[in-house]
Amino acid sequence: MKRAPALRGMTWDHPRACLPLEAFEATGAAPPVDWERQSLAEFEAHPIDELAQRYDFMIIDHPGLGAAVAAGALTAYEDLVDPAELHRWVAGSVGASGASYRLGARTWAVPVDAAAQVAVRRPGVPVVHRWEDVLPVAREHPPTLCLAGPHAGLILLAMCSGRQPADPGLLLDPAVAADAVALLREVFRTSTREVLDPVGVHESLEAGDGPAWCPLTYGYVTYAGTLAWSDAPSWRGTVPLSVLGGTGLAIAARSASDPSVGAWVRAFLDDRVQSDLVPRAGGQPAHRAVWESSRSFYADTLATLEAAWVRPRYPGWITLQDQLSEQVREAIVAGRDPAAAIADANRRHAALRRACER
Image (cartoon, rainbow, N blue to C red; front, side, top):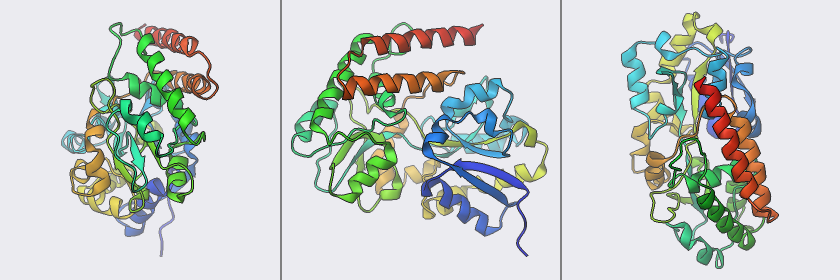
């Protein structure tokens, strides 16, 4: 007789997120979990502390971590598992995936999916290694830009991540950011002028009757076989410029005392599950061994994952990120002066940093 789930979880509604969890549940290797789903837009914006009131497990994005920790919504893994186990899970993840879920010397989630902004293309489109070469290629192969939701702002943050301001109170160097927006505006003029999120970008490319490539969007192994990826472009002589994405497995504070929670976590984070079952089921694990394999999607973008910039995780970041993106999108699509948007982001960033330091 099938066991009735006693635990509840929330993930995001895409095969990359859902199918590995379904495949793992089918093994019967751990206590059953009833997994519910929310859209990508909800995943990127829904406060984690609200989810923690209803779910034992949450698949989360690291930028929302600060607000959830401040609200006391999550369990630190140090209070749940053996230190050696935790070290193995975190150290075995790619790039800064593990570090992105640590705040105040505590680990609030463990990475189960890794992603960064990379370049994606249809067969026949040349690989572009530098933003300086995007426009010449765009004149021959129509591109699209990933501008929906928070992603217009995330492109700008990626391009500016190689030139961090000397003043830590600033999020963006005003001159560098203005130059980046000017370049993105020129690329948009050569593009199909769609406003898409990462899934929409991949689906549009796969359809084959629209854009041929995108210079920067979060990569999805789901489309391997029809599309190809390469490292994020550099700009002005820097390493590949990208903002870390991916997801982590967080546990509600109210669920920490349930022994079935720890049992499920240990079973799902087993090396064999993460390196074999998850990728076979269509997932994109954070497990370093997968990214260091010869599989093309992973091998072709590993350098970007290793260098990707980690966003701030203080309370208020998500709102700042969304507002910045809306203003950057208007600057790119409608040609508005980006100076006010850049100054506004810097003011709010400084104020939020000061609030955290008090």
